[in-house]
Length: 340
Image (tube, rainbow, N blue to C red; front, top):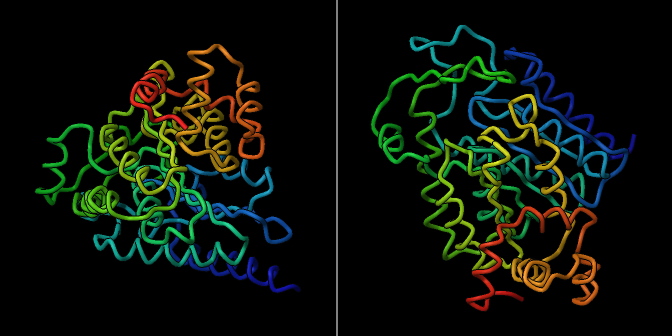
């Protein structure tokens, strides 16, 4: 057995033994790994959302695996455990941010053994952790895919509620399709992510980050798109290969945007956009320049890429990004001279 084979066998065996001892609430909550027969150029580390499980990233993980990547989707600490959880007996979710931070740092180390470059991604609180990792280890993260990060709520009164009250809260959509995680939680276990989100927003303007692609959606009623864009603007000052996209309201893509099972009929769109970013090397300014020439000069995507000699920096799926890009952002960037 090669050293690589021994490493992936150890990851699988140790994780299986740990999760069988818990035990798990559902098979959908178990960690999922997609291993190539050899180390890869890029490795994906995906982090699921609060009270959910690895099932949220299985479709994306399968897509990146099919494209030749190694993929790790670990179960978050305190998540996915079987039990009669309720207000008197809440699920064992951590209230110490260091538990999560040490967890993702350890998995980053695991990922580094499996390939040359690590792509981290997450949804909601998982995206908060992925953003923290991109700021904490900017030289060790190749790209960060930040899906609807929980930096604050879309309604500020909710933030006040989270900051003050220690109550047990049961999800209003706990019976929604695709929910294999916990039905509820104690507020302090979510509060740590609100605090971490604020720390990230405060830290980003003065810190180097790994390149981030931050996703928002106009139909997301959970997290603040304004804070998403503010984080992007802060990161962009130090990391020009960061991108931002707010998915149009017409698509009706809500906060749980990773799977069709959870209500996103455009699951494959999100996956394709993510792959286009990871496999491209364009700066935000170059992206805007392509958009400008397509939108305001009527050129085709292929013609602009050829004219700017960007073939080596553009993925096969790149044209879809241009279709989704906010036209007003392109126009405003042209007015303010922010194009490449």
